[in-house]
Length: 315
Image (cartoon, rainbow, N blue to C red; front, side, top):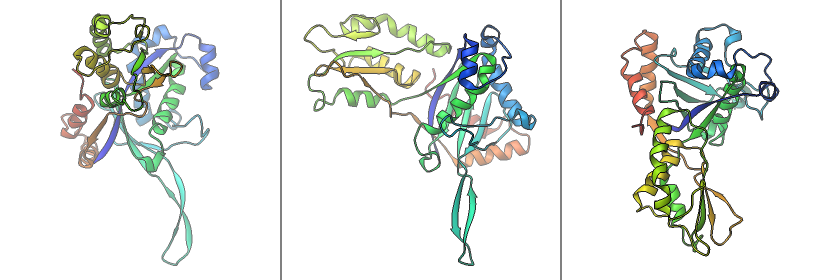
């Protein structure tokens, strides 16, 4: 059984092309943001198709800004189909072992993680397998993918942002920690990125209608308690519960901060290490490879099972 962290991804426009080229080390601008943004998902799918079908020059080379020129080898489990991309990305290591002659020998280990991209309209989700033995921290492989795609997308005056979905239970556990924060919280901050994914925009518009009356506070995307008081933040308030669910479970990406009453200079990001997980059986990926080999991906039960998993929680 493979365990995955779930991410939303959104595209953004790069308006200052000269700055972006310096940032990502690119040499050529193929499209302006005005041209590329309306077809942003098509461009991502084109890049994945070229990576699978194209020449060596068209292959994607996964790298990390910290490890420099080290390339993280990858291999597709199937040809990109119906907006779904499934691949493995490896962190190659040289390791030593003792052979049958009791001699120490070096060998290459291609330990890897599965990555699923659902580029279907209205979805834009990514699932990254959790294997700390391969990449160490929870964020390493995410940063590799983001860094690599942004280097390529800069040629199209685009960038991509990955926002990990979080568990709202972690927010309420934090809020209810009276031992650490006996006086409660003076301020809550909501950081909202520019939204261009329609399903996130719709939920946002619905939630903002009742914020003022729910918190009994003023709104400028920082909701502040009255002087000497604390905010009324309660899981029993159905609107607040829905709002926290939106920012953590729907939007994701560390967009909530709290300021405790007893230390108003301290702003705490809530949910930084909180993740939403999904599980997919190893058998599903074995069957997916078989269906790909037999050119039976359309109507494949294995591919359908992955699509269902990637849409979990989307209304």
